[in-house]
Amino acid sequence: MCLSTIYVNSGKEQKEVLKDVAKIEAEGLGFWMIDLFGKRTFIEGTIQTINLMDGHFIMIENHNLT
Image (cartoon, rainbow, N blue to C red; front, side):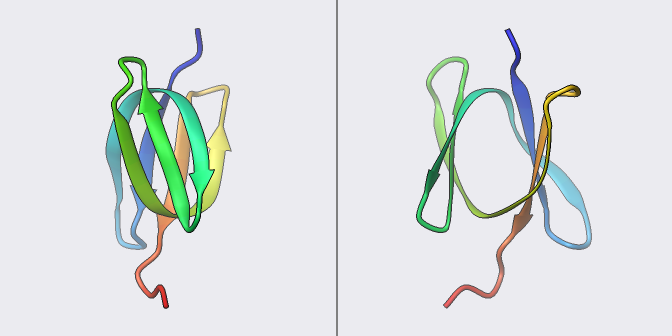
């Protein structure tokens, strides 16, 4: 089983926001991250990098949404 760790890049730093993510669903201006236990977390932003070999998903956090 391949689970991912989600990081958000705010420009100044990269912080871990969720581990053991099993599913990612796009919705509107962001993504629903669903972990192994069904916990759902919504993150507003755009994708910067997805590295499936290392199990990492990095997003750019949107600060100036209109």
